[in-house]
Image (tube, rainbow, N blue to C red; front, side, top):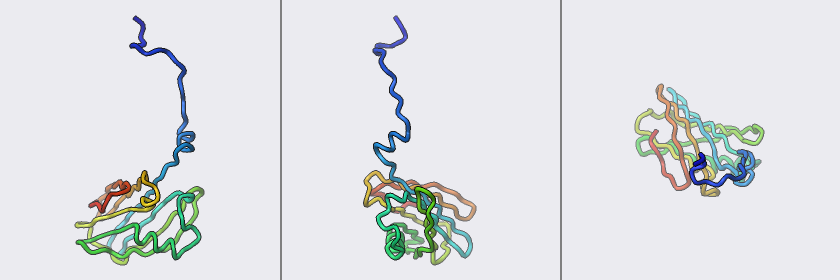
Length: 146
């Protein structure tokens, strides 16, 4: 009565994370939303090889401004593209909110690349008024309260 519990002994298969990602790439982005008195910013990081519009700043601005929403009291806060920089395999985008909304009654939606990749996952770190919260968005998700 060995310790196999009915399993036949067989070869051990070890698969590295890099090998799994090569078989199925990770579709994800991260964002930091920071709202303080008089200012609001979004710093978004996405994999460069997944972006359909690199090198086209007008296309980048239009896309980001429609796929990342901040809503306060049912009213959309305008988001403006400020800059982009390469960081190896990723691109980091900086966006500004046209106004600094109060921390209460906010809703956020991060739909970056979800229309391209059904398995896209977008993580958002939200900081406002001393509060910090994390939100996770998948394709098909709507806006969420932080």
